[in-house]
Amino acid sequence: MTMNNRPHRRVILSALSFVVCSAGLGIMPSSLAAVSEVRVGVILPLTGDKATFGQESLNGLKLALEKAGKESPTLNLKVEDTQGTPSGSAAAVNKLIATDKVNVIIGEVASSNTIAASTAAQSAKIPLMTHASTNDTITKGKDFISRICFVDSFQGAVMAKFAVSNLKAKTAAILVDSDSDYSRGLRDSFKSAFTAAGGKIADDLVISYSQKDRDFKTQLIKVRRALPDVVFIPGYYTQVGSILRQAKELKLTTKFLGTDGWDSPDLFKIAGPAASAGHYVSSHFAADDTDPRVQEFVKEYKARNKENPGAMAALGYDAGFFMRAAVKKAGSNDPSKIRDAISAMKNFDGITGTITLDPNRNAVKPAVIVQTSEKEFKFLTRVNP
Ligand code: PHE
Image 1 (cartoon, helix red, strand yellow):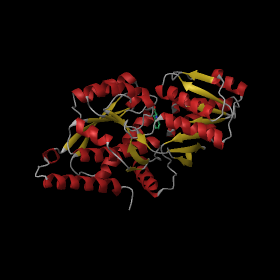
Image 2 (image 1 turned 90 degrees about the vertical axis):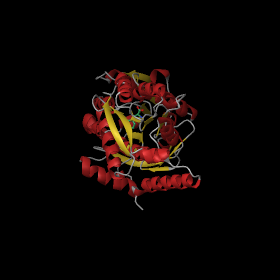
Image 3 (image 1 turned 30 degrees about the vertical axis):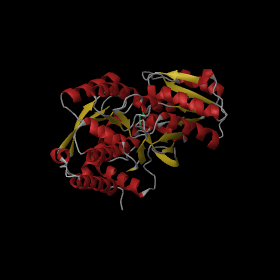
Image 4 (image 1 turned 30 degrees about the horizontal axis):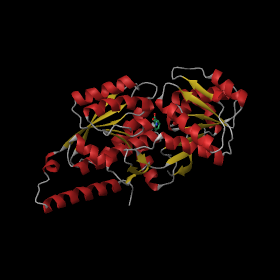
């Protein structure tokens, strides 16, 4: 059986059992019969310095819905560009709810943007499911907010353990993007896991940069002076690409540890030859994973988009099938019922792993560790929660 008909089969089975149960009780499944369309708002950074994230997400999402076919109810996408900012994300949510009357929302990508978006969605009681935002706080105390990706307390610990166990690192520095909730959260989770495993991080080697910065040499020179065993950089590809390039210019050869925000084809364009240094990066998916389900997706994605899919494309694809399954299970376009169906999802067979939502509506699933080479990431290992 191929990966692509699995979500399908489950959807058909659960829809059937709903009809059968309802018929047995003598109740007409009126909501299921009535709803032919669910309006799905999609908020993504289609412009700005995280634009590859938005474009890849949308490519993946559209591919999933195309493959899922026209089976009713159809998911009618209303896409809004957030321009990659928190205020743009909140405005996009408000517009989608007030004007487009969406029943549910998918997005954003960067955690700071999703935090702003989720406050707006929660107060309107419209469910928002992010496919990619990993900061732990996003779903806390917000019962309409969920995610199909892992959280940063897991991601940070994965990289800290990898540094200690596999790279035998005893000391580390951290470069933190001080404008990002994502980066600050990962700084904390990496630091506590690395320290708990016996590693040391000197206070003055937790060094900040800003998303507006173009020159990272002051920070890198500090690192070069201390020469820690590894440098953890939980950042986004636009800044990280420049950091890699400038580190090479400074002849800093320390191994870097990255996180999912590195996962963009543009990282290699910005970093140039500096990417080939073999840095280790945690992510959700690797295009060279030999799993046949992954390979089928890679082939189809590449045929349409002329490039290999990154983690973001894979998460967008999983979000499409996941949302379809949830809407089918809800049998309704009522936002509260869709919320309940999302929250109850167990063992959803995605290409980024098997997805089960925990009681706080966060996905419990594996991470992969990939390594940078000249032009792409290479799969190294998978780490289970
Ligand atoms: N996890 C990142 C965040 O929360 C977003 C991201 C996910 C980026 C996957 C790349 C790949 O900000």
